[in-house]
Image: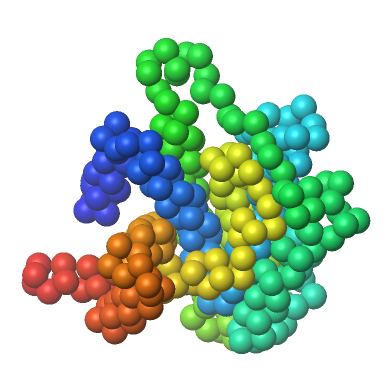
Length: 316
């Protein structure tokens, strides 16, 4: 077993033990961090590995949350199928969205995805869609019940939600590890490094970009469904354009082209703002901004890149 796999195993063991060491409030916070980590895994595939910019993935989280909520409340489907359905809906919409704009350069594509994240909350509030989306009132959901076989062991609902999200994150992580090692993953990375050379080798550059975009949106949609499961409520205010900006921060701070960086970046964007609020109740986002600036200045390749550079220096 190599060093990376050993670290992954240690992280998994710690993650499994964590909810038994925390209060319900902190368990919920860590569950939210894992939910955002799932989104950042997909977003890192798109930005870090494929080199395609996006500033609109909070929109796909919102879309997945609404799709999940509608499936749960309007159909006999259970939470599991509904959450998967939320991911599928986000993936299909992302394909329909990405196909006509596939030839745009990175800057224009980023602005276009940002417009999607800005427009979607207004769209779901529209009176003609209110019968499905609840309009400004949103959708209230029944909680996911802890299975009796699990509940008899004293597992609380917050702990159960945590393990459900952790399972989704582990599966999502494993899928991307496998993807990046096969031919498709190598094509994705070739498109990032040199699209002209990739095309000369027979790689369909536009199709590869659309594929990466759709996969990243599926991850965001599933994460949105998991968010709905935890909060038991979805509204147009659940995810905003600001959340898309914060997701981009998580990718850069954690480390581009690093799956571990996506997870670390998620913890950064979920817990550093909380710490910033404790430092300054008057200007918490100013403190958060300073934390981002310092991290990027001292760790230009992200936290994971900095850790790898530090490890290489001391193992020579």
